[in-house]
Length: 223
Image (tube, rainbow, N blue to C red; front, side, top):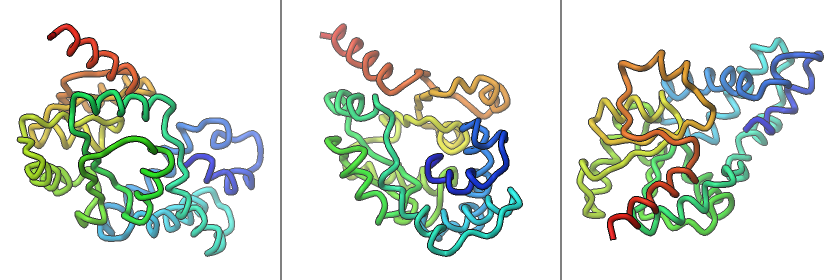
């Protein structure tokens, strides 16, 4: 996503905190994204992103991007790279668990994501915001997950919700009474302290790779 914002960032005077700080930039952009998800929950993600792109440009006092530029940004979803450890970790976890994706991405974008950045990973089910009609952290998405995995003979208490986002995933997971794992890739300890009373994740790892190694070790010791 950060790479897709560079056409805007390159128009800013330098130095500036946006071109130099990826975390700062994505946090600022995602504030517009969250507002749109909250107030237009049925809008497809690839249609929502161009609106967020334009709103972000306006917040930077930049001229409004062309419709084509905004659409191009929204069409890049399926090319966003996965973290280097994600695919190997998911393949390793698949040896022990069913894999179910609960995504805020739309159906048109999820297919190239699975075929591209996540190629080689076998998912047992994929539930998208478009299917559900709302975006995480709406509890409807998690209720949909709980009901959906019943078709895989998975009970609520058997779900281990694993995610990086505290606000979109770990907080609603606690509200719904789900066991969860937090993948803390960005060392968000300050954010964790802010949300401490809303969190109850069971495990915490720095990466999916670290989680997969811990799971493999646990199953090996159970033999």
